[in-house]
Length: 240
Ligand SMILES: [Zn+2]
Image (cartoon, rainbow, N blue to C red):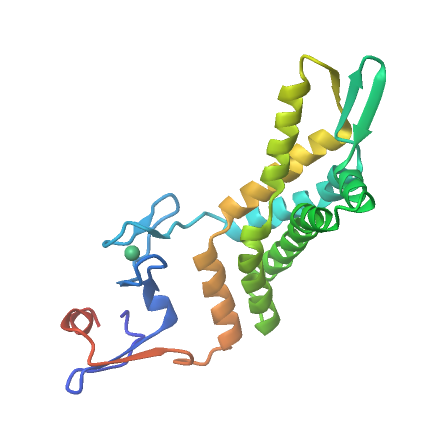
């Protein structure tokens, strides 16, 4: 294991550092880590799950995209998205106005769900990603940074900007022949926000981030948080 692991062949004891292996999230197979280049993928040999997919300058790209998303956030949420003109009756609305309308009409549960998944969680995710990316760019980090990155990971499945976008597209398609539709500034800001959010997720190289945070938190102490395997299989000993 690159000379970092400690081994005792006699009593079959192998110590692995966190950077030496991947554990497949789908089938739990422990796979030795291999350095690959940006654009290549390391897949699990048992189930084919992608274990590593490095991105060049991941922290810089993710930081720029999350900052773009933050700058577009306020106009995308508060400015009108569309103006509908049906036989002279004009109606316009923003994401914030739709949430307010739901809450004001008594649909508290639905309004809170839309508020959380379309406004609060996307904003918190962008803030967390920006702060963590700045730390990773500077090769710094502490327990708070680790907590923020873990929280970002947990919140990932609760963001539903894409669902809101599908709702807008359905509205446009349904009313296309019945109403005159005008696209307002908020619509284009929302498209930009959605693009920046999706691109920042795709540019995020989680393995690289964890490596940097681990090194920063470890503070030069060798062997801390390492995994010791007793009675390890022969193939692990040969690689070590
Ligand atoms: Zn697998």
